[in-house]
Length: 263
Image (cartoon, rainbow, N blue to C red; front, side):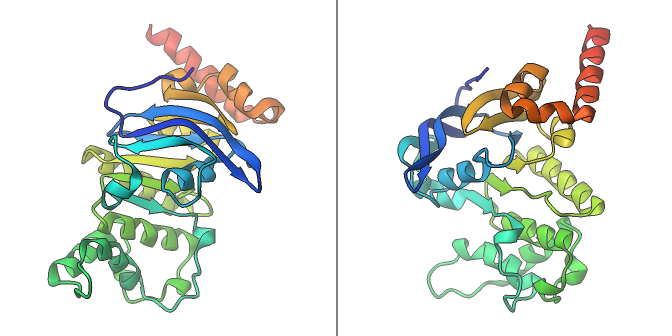
């Protein structure tokens, strides 16, 4: 089941990506609605992170076309923010928390322009939003994993983008950070932002997202979570691996029961 939308914020057609001539994503085709928190779900090695990097133009395409607001990424890059996996960052880089967040303002500056008082105020606002203002002078390498992730989100917020791509923002964070991050995503959605998140935890996916993409090298399904989070589509995505996830089965049974009861 792949549901298409009118006036999509993201449009992907016939996307194939290959590493060393070996395809890792096959013929992916979907559209995404604006103003939603969207989850990209699938097993390890499914190509979830690769899909984000392809959309952002970080890796080359073997074939296909990607449009954001019906434009190529190069024409709208300032309207888009990308939060990479925390593991891909050199946390030994000698920078303070506020310096990292200030980097989010650089696309707004002209060549050789120094950050203004307004830029520094926005940095403080973004750090307050992720509950990290008290750490603004701390070196990023001295932070916990959850704190580092929140700093990265603050940097993304400082860009004042309209569309956010986040690669595993909940990976390796503590419960307090996870709660703070999902609260922030809800605030962003309320402001009309669109957030696309690579996520590995099926047990929280239904709770966290409005729209879900299921992929395993190919696109299995894309649509509102109520239509996509079904035993049949999850089985098609995960195969035999799904049978070990007993909590997912319990969740699906509860969801099915609630739907019948509500009807």
